Amino acid sequence: KNEVEQSPQNLTAQEGEFITINCSYSVGISALHWLQQHPGGGIVSLFMLSSGKKKHGRLIATINIQEKHSSLHITASHPRDSAVYICAVSTLNTDKLIFGTGTRLQVFP
Amino acid sequence: KAGVTQTPRYLIKTRGQQVTLSCSPISGHRSVSWYQQTPGQGLQFLFEYFSETQRNKGNFPGRFSGRQFSNSRSEMNVSTLELGDSALYLCASSLFGGVTYEQYFGPGTRLTVT
Image (tube, rainbow over all chains, first blue to last red; front, side):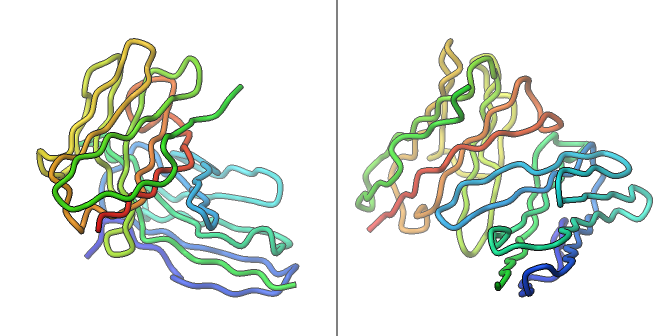
């Protein structure tokens, strides 16, 4: 079993829909990162959080430390949101990033 | 402020050769981490350098090595290339060492080993 699991693996949506991507982890963490990767490979850090909730524009990230679960929400999705979204955790014991396998999102006009 | 830059962006090498990849962090950032991304294994941590010292290392063979210079620029080297080393190699910089600081990623170097 992977230490960081994401669901769903693939997601298609119509423009304007509300999107949720989930991340569960099984290790002790100091922080959780949400990353966005566009075709071509470049990765952008969207959020880093260790508790509660963060919001940036149409993106919202939440984390529940007790349940070892985080969600990334996209409100009013747009075709430019099409990308792979990757969850990664900073591990307590090793101070390394462990990555989920990513969620491929396609938003159609 | 300029972002993280990586050179070269694309590289084709033959099995058995060696390769050196370069990463220039954001100005003022002292930590550089390297990652390998493959379709089969996803993203995996290679190593982290902070103030010219290797601070942390992933589970990769000794063929993978790196270093960091006094200006925080970092290089990684892979010797005796194998077909399985074909991957996107990403570096990320942060202000301080450790992954509890926000990581800023470069565009990556796509290495193809034939």
